[in-house]
Length: 381
Image (cartoon, rainbow, N blue to C red; front, side, top):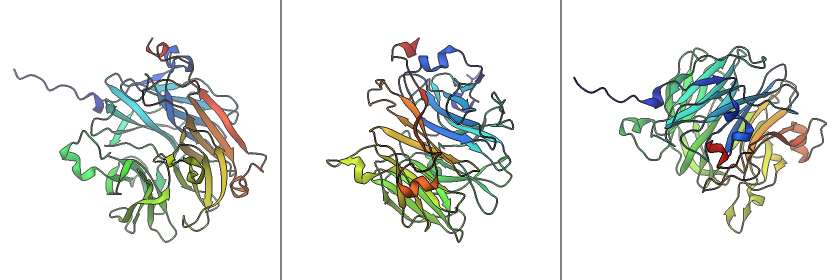
């Protein structure tokens, strides 16, 4: 008999653990970062990030936590997406869709990156519940997606998923190794790749898309020089004007979205302050707004001036408040745990951004969501 082909573990649905045990709590985590946030209409906040092990690699899992008091207190994980080694779950994204369903997306890969990865999604119709039940994980596409989907004026839903341009390369996926658009015409039931931008010198992509007035799509992409861009005038099928240096940045994740007022929000690092002696720092995380579709930026609310603050994600409440989540000191190049390893949140309004200071009663900075407290050795237990 012919030997059976080995099972491709990265294509198997990752286990979802409800009521996670003590091994997933803050005291057992030596590493964590890359968070995401969402808010329900009634005010429940949800947050997720990834952790597990001493750094990025096999054993990473995604914990989901919640707050019912505007972020004053947060639970320990109510569920965990935890694939077995050698796979890992990472780069989560929370999104409340137009139907009021809460989506939890995450990436699953064998090892740190297997040349294909994959975007998986869990969905719940109970976003206001303290411990909702989600659907079984479903694989949507190849690649990695950690930034929120976009609903176009056409009604189409778009996932900004990328297949990284880095080893190991799978030749059969050469045509997909771009900053891609994965599109649904049936409110998330099915998804199809539409096209992708090839922005020079891109680094992990982490792209976000804005539908501009007039219908063009503006894509911003993380690049080694900063933040690159590309434009599509046909709904994402083709892209033009790709360049790597549209905006300054330290080669890190940013956040872009249209606010309820019609302004555009950008959260990134203020490079006039974050570059020291020619070295670009992940510091001075700042929020700006634009009244001219991203041509110019005004205001400038400094959210956190410290080094190693990074990976902002944001959402906006119906009342207009903006919630930003980010990480601080998630680890160094040797995966040695830092004493902080915190997930933090900022809450503010457009008024605060335009003033460049907290002037509204809603403004709160450096709100602690979670801090990992285990040592590197303790996390192995």
